Length: 465
Ligand code: F0G
Image 1 (cartoon, rainbow, N blue to C red):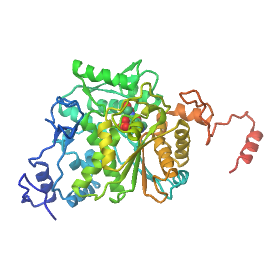
Image 2 (cartoon, rainbow, N blue to C red):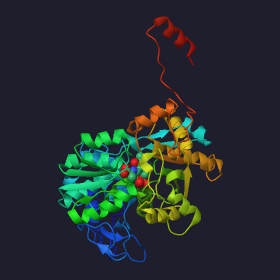
Image 3 (cartoon, rainbow, N blue to C red):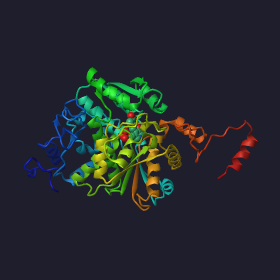
Image 4 (cartoon, protein in one colour):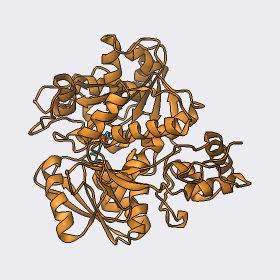
């Protein structure tokens, strides 16, 4: 087996075992550090600095890793071996791949619930709805708090612990706050969450309350509150765990790592996901590029990001070019992605270019129907996640995705996050923010019956399918 490089000169390390090889690799001189994402700047920061954007140019930061010269076989053997372990960090679908997150120096301080290990479902019913021969879904709703945020939050809170933080904060459309509240509770920290008043789904609010977070509802939208809290964080010294936090992005890379492992490293033609603040596309793109650098994949899949039409500044920027023009007063019933000024749009744009990607938007009706189809597959998802299937269908109809393409859709949140939406759709009461009714195309309203055995028996005979 080839050994990983040991230092700047690139000479092979004289190590005897796989474990020693990995240790040698982790201790190389090219240690992970923070770097400005702007390719014209690239200013460096230490990993232990509490900083979210570049002091010189204002761009977001990333954790810069160097995987040059690593031996993919070495990683694969280690990851496979951990499947037999019962240690939480080996069971976790994030930390099992910890060589891809080398910023963590002390695995004993990892905060894990444990997350990841989410299923990759075959979804023939959704495939035929979209006009595809086949389709699978990587369902991130099967995480401990029911969304993909857990993959990132375990990394963000682990970094907060190693920085000695006592208090963490985030602004959220719901899922980030639920996830942060859970991980902060597990780490014994105080969680402070800021939410757009009255605009988050009850399932998510309930989680934050139950996990003990200080929950502050602000009468403003997500974009306005994020701008406010970024200033407040410096003022009162709280550690921010929104997706501007580069360590969260590191954790979220594991979504594609695990997905490719489940596919035996066969790269799909397309990966499709919903976009709001655009942290997840930034993470998935980085993860894929780093897997290519390690040598675990040769090519990148194409990536499509799907937004809700009333909150689609990134789709407009992709179509029109130039700078992103924020949508003032974004609207959608998919409250998770009700965002008009996504902070990570430059990172996201660069990942879309690297992956020859696409960005598009879908209507409230398209999201609602796609969501009901995903429900009929037997797993379901929350509204924002259904933008994935609605987008795939639109791109297939338009000819951008071929009917025989190998497509993986990412479902970001669990069905039970927003039960109110589900009930309204199926009972024909759902209304778009414009006031227009959303038609219950696949409506399945509950039936109320009198307490009469023969009438119930008659109804059951008639409804036999
Ligand atoms: N899907 C769900 C279920 C989400 O909760 C989010 C974002 C997204 C998609 C979009 O991901 O922002 O990385 O592009 N939710 C954030 C929150 C904003 O506060 O929970 P993104």
